Length: 630
Ligand code: ADP
Ligand code: MG
Image 1: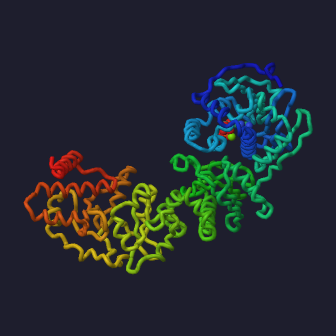
Image 2 (image 1 turned 45 degrees about the horizontal axis):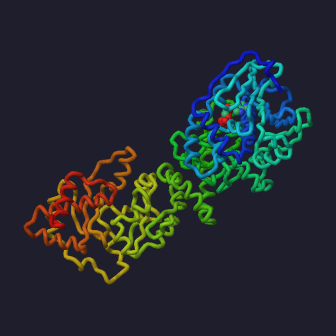
């Protein structure tokens, strides 16, 4: 297989930076999983066939007469080469430098970071990051690509030893395919096992059997081709003819991931819009789930012709779903934008969204373990739907699961919450903030705990947004545990022997003087029902936004009007009893220091900083000095 004599012009190019590191990493850290190079080559070949099938729709002359798409794996023991050949769209000169010379552009750096941080093998990440082609250098000393873009006269020969440079030369059109690519791997010493047909067959069966293009194996360049994979479109088959294993393989092929789908949904919709859908909820989180630039991951077909591989068919809060949608009614020869604007597209979007939520919801009812695994990975994304899609809010609220003060595992549904409400409890209480453990330790929750009232602990960034718009559940309103006068007094304490109302007087002098001292920073000072151990806490005024909500919104660049909080104090706490006495006495400086320290301490507990760090430090020092007799 020497084509050097056939090449005419030749030029050298240098790979982009990072490539050397990437190659080193691939060869050294994923050596044990090097079989995947074949999956990557076959997947690229199948993509190329899909692209040409699409282009040939508007220009049938791109195909030869009676030609059908196939991928060939050709073994050559004498030359020590393994070739993957396709009659797909091929590559132009620009495609070659662009696609094979830059390696997934932005993906590379991310990949390297991810591998460094991950406990998974790098192999699991390769397909996801669009660097599949480079996995060939795990098994080859030299990789040669001979290719011709469909419809073009010139053919090219790309070659590289993967050490930082590649070469592109013009290829004699006579010895080149009419269209398509031939990727020739000169296998390295350690990889000769890939010349064994049985080995190749088993790798294809394991990793590529769900590819929608047939695969042939040739034991030698002149041998009879043997079909090793049928290349049927799985989604077009009937459900009863498909084994679970086939779904799994198809999912892995579609997603480039090696896990199993957490949920597989396959159906045919009939009626005004006709389409087939095969959809998967992945078993693990894609790396870029929260990347704002992440595109939709839905493949759209029209009668098995791929129209778009990254369509935004589903709403953003279902962006983790991987799916194939095939509708005979989707127009083939219009732009992607026009497809996305068509009425049919809208109808499919609605139908698929509804069905997927139905299926996920059903799982929540029938198999909580499976459902919780999905919720754990994708709950924070699904919750975006609570404010983005009011039409589906009820369905989403029904499936939502929460960590609460009574259930730290995050398995509580709102239905369970409502069923366990205490007599006289009127609202579904929540607390938003960062980190479930941290919010669980908030002093504002003491009074709720003492009354056996459960509180939702909302620690996902998205929570701050949906609670603002959610009206309630089963007629019970949502209410922040740190907002307004708490109306939990009507709920009995669990321990009936403590009666805080009688345990302490109402601290009349303290409250009056503290209000004066803190007039510039608080709206009010009052006795709290929320506290049972701590001395004080801050809450939002009745009609102002929740305090933590203000913090989170500010952190996300969304400013809201900052309102003065209310300082609530615990009359049963010895500190307050002492301060009530002090407020009658003649040590106004000490009283003022103490009140300010209580206020700043409450801020600290809320994750904020003291209002004025220097004044805080001075007060603390004065009080400490006094206490220590300094
Ligand atoms: P990805 O497939 O995720 O884009 P790869 O590293 O596998 O990443 O391939 C890089 C690019 O090289 C592909 O996107 C495609 O443009 C091009 N390419 C690779 N193999 C082929 C092929 N057999 N035919 C046409 N183009 C190909
Ligand atoms: Mg690829």
